Image (tube, rainbow, N blue to C red):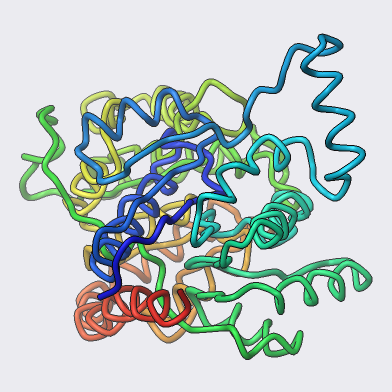
Length: 406
């Protein structure tokens, strides 16, 4: 154990994304287990609401700060002074990093926890690289934590990002495809192979009672919808995506008299971040009210994991909803739109047979894959039972890698 280290967690969107919540919860536990008397500061893009949830949930975070701090009022005296100072003395910093520089100075280690920020999946990763560069400027060690990396689509940018990755003090990657990609880029000396920290997330029974939990003698299927998937660059639009799931869920209800639990894993009133609206829409259109349940938005990540663990099978488009199901030994179909889905499935099952590429997804494909999942359910559970201890141990090992680096 070492004493007195300040860890600043950056790259975090907000607990409205239960996957981000799961990463932060488990990262805090890993740090606290490795470093005695550590101080943990969370930079959040949704800091006010996160602060409330952290206090209510008893999460051992010492301070929450805005991930995008507000500057002075535009064209006011303070804004003019800040702008002049930044341009004269800190021209290499973005406005966000300039306003956050005091926190970088106070931190011993700055950890980027976003999971898949360092890829082209959601646009350029430049802002995340810039933050780590700014942290190093003010003396902090830098870490990319439990991540999937790349691929980067533009060769010129790939070379730039490879150079930036070499400057990071520690990169922990959560699946082999990213590890292999980094080796392809020549980034090897600072890389350690781990598992996603969310494999350590506890499952907590929610205070709400749902009939789905008590359903006996029926097939119970969890369906994790994503508002983002319909907008995905390789997808075919929200309506086509939703209709596939309407038809698929209707098939499950008619063929197996299944009970379906719709799981919204990202809940915010912003387009692309409101799975709850998509879940409610699909459930309404399936029109089997006695067979379909939508999880309430009040559940936190631990409670959602418990709900998912009660399913016999799970189909999920959000990565951390599938991590919740796989870590609960639930046979799972992952809707894949990036390297992480295939990598995580290969780690746990040895193959990607139960990943459905969103670019080629059809109702027929979902039905065929579900039939295979049912036929092979016991075998899948046995493989998960066998492989999960190793995956969970690798998630814990991230603390030892962090300790050696810092």
